[in-house]
Image 1 (tube, rainbow, N blue to C red):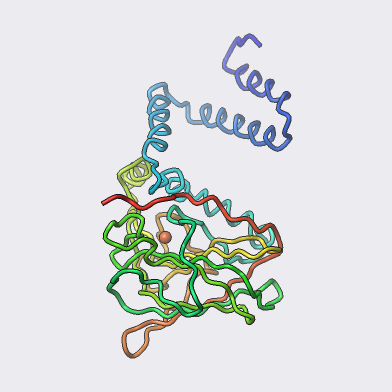
Image 2 (image 1 turned 120 degrees about the vertical axis):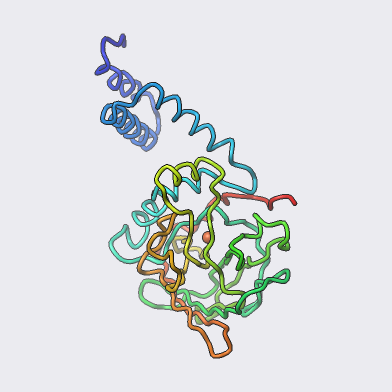
Length: 292
Ligand SMILES: [Fe+2]
């Protein structure tokens, strides 16, 4: 259609939606256009701001590499990752869930481990942590044979993919739950860490004068056919950034009980509840380790 005023633009774009064969794609694109246009009108976006926004979006892609996922980092910093998680889990958001953001640091292909194995693949200083977990269904029945990926940062706050001094797949492992739904491992107690700030996500935090810390946590990804695959994180209640997580990931259901022992080591027990649904592993946000 010929556009006569700004009011016609939204109608013109929405008018092109009718050819879209997929009903879901049509719904998503229509809502996206409506909200984007409403945003421009509400904020009276200037031309200069629009040019800066285009540069910002391009920079997200330019910052992304096989060992870093800037779009995932930014989605977390805007709270979108956890919103998508909470509306899609816990029986459609109606009950607490152990599901949480996958985060930008999951790598596929972690080594398969025996129950109780260590996640250390190169010397990694820090207090020892012994973890014991269970996977159950919504009725508390053990789920045996679930595959559980585990990964976390070192005590200096770096994942192995960010840190050439750590061995390949250090602090990562893949476990299978036993007949009682349990699995366990030993590792070092993770520390809180700063998320990278040298890209657009960092510019966002700087513009808002926000810190870039994440409270200490372990990551999990639980896969079992017949159940909805969930990513999870278990947070350290002692961490000073627990209620100001720069990725908005901390939920009440995921605050763990990291119990300090007399010898300075820690123990943590945690139960993950999974619900019926589609078993589908997410696309890994990164695929490689940073070069030295
Ligand atoms: Fe993390």
